Length: 124
Image (cartoon, rainbow, N blue to C red):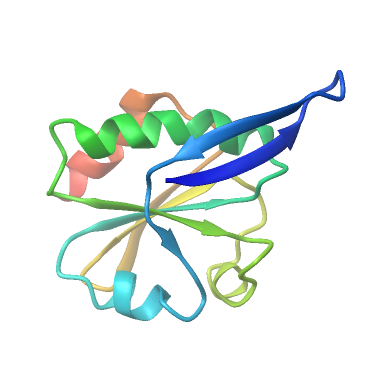
């Protein structure tokens, strides 16, 4: 489980946790482009409020009916700059769905859980 720290408007430090696997520039090709299972990549940053809001939805999806049918992984755009540039990430959160090594669809912003699930189901 990864721990993320954020500063609230009141100056309080809050902790949030994520059980989703993480990607790096170095692991992206092997984990995403060479995967035989579709992969949904969450491009995010620790300082991004909407990114924190989408994480629990992704965790629910990863444990629900789609478990084992899609891999859901996170890539921190601040710590890994090559892959976000390669895919022209301009806003976060951006969710990109890959199948057979190719980008097939994407969502930008904090989307409802049902919208994310529908995106995945369209390519399964």
